[in-house]
Image (tube, rainbow, N blue to C red):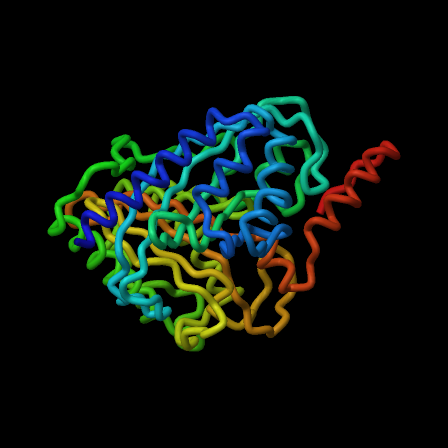
Length: 360
């Protein structure tokens, strides 16, 4: 039954995405009201955050977005779903129905959006989303948008240059096999979930006070393919080897946020821990994950308990993980460290009007 339910949920979301790609702005309200629960819980990366109810979602998110990008089209490169088995350490509920995907939304930027000046140019917005489905409609949505990459395309840089590769579009699966519209082999799905769980268990072997910058306790070479690719958000960038992943992301991240023993945060939301075919996905939204022990991206440590909005899609190749797409809400992360990146944008806009070059 869960397989049939999953297929029906994926069909509903895929149909919605195709219709959204071709709907006029006047057609959006009726289309979205049919697809969303009336009291939908809609969550988006900062500075948008939470919106409750279908009509406010339409008025406060979709219509401004489409006015800014009238020809907006969604091009996902991973699309999957499943019924959560409740195995996530973050305490997601067994039996919840999820549909998930990541890729790009692309359109010509013709009207200012979120205070970002319109460019009149084709613009790419990297997205990742998890939906909770109930009775074939979206009851909850958790949507990551790489707002910093959008801002960079508008000509503003709010963080120091990323350690990893940054700029251009983040590629999808090299095998181009991430759109899982059909039923997948349950054995392969289980292998993917189990491999990701083992890799995550390895990460939890790290002890900040003991290991510091030594990452060997996590034994990540047991889990990652020699050709692994890790695609992080603007501010971190992409890593094309395990060594780059450790040097450009993990070591810096663990210096700033090195705890691995924080209890699950009941205030946070766990995304569905789903394996489907060669893919697995998971995430947290506003879940506590570490104290801010050290400086990060030039920002001194605050000592605060940090929450995170972090999604993952992994691709398994045989016995190893080979690709990983990782949107993180960096604006929310820095907001918790008392750095308002949207205020930085406003300062840079005003400085540019005065003919002054101003960076982070």
